[in-house]
Length: 306
Image (cartoon, rainbow, N blue to C red):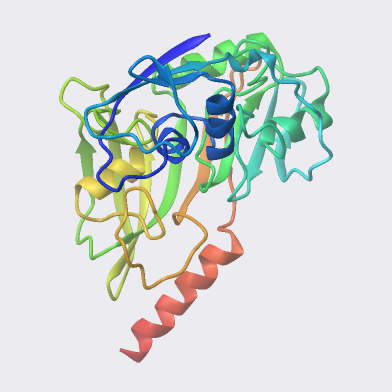
């Protein structure tokens, strides 16, 4: 059982089930409602209904069951496999797919698909909920990630990520004109008031993103972002801190986007690492998704007309 405490800041007077979903990782609104029904949510020591509207300054306490109880179901979900051998599998995750199950979101994830494809041939280091998962990308970020098929491979890949020896390059379409290449070196931690968000926080974990200008459009810039570290939401938070939020980013972006998307235009295009068994450096790249490329083509045509 995990005990979570939230100090309420609720100027919009939203319901407690929605408030919890927006402030606690991996908890959906429907699951938050279930927690209320099970009397696992209290305010001032008293259990509250899912419709309760918490007030500024109140303290919400949540008894969150550990996710290890989830029954993981292998699901026959198509995988875009870029490379596979006995130790690793590199997959191209589509936008909208969650990497691993969590309470309130138990199916349709990359892990469900991997369990069907790989069976028991996935590392167990990250527990029953995240078999094989060495690193993650956001639900609405598409692109490449490497999965470990055994514990030795997992340890080797995790060490490369920790030592900054793996290569991860992303394409990002951001708002505004970025005139030159640069580096963002700003520490990132959980947002002090909104647990669903990350933020630039003094004393947070070191976070370094290098970026290169690839194309400039009217009001937008296509960047290549190279991760030196791999913090949660790192590129999204860093670019927003420069005033160049990712197009389609509903968490850190601008309120009214002219370009309509199903999520942020961020794509994990290239991943490189030393093979955990052979030591050979391997690098894989994927083409931009069709929806991403179509938006770039429209911007190019607009540039030509202008």
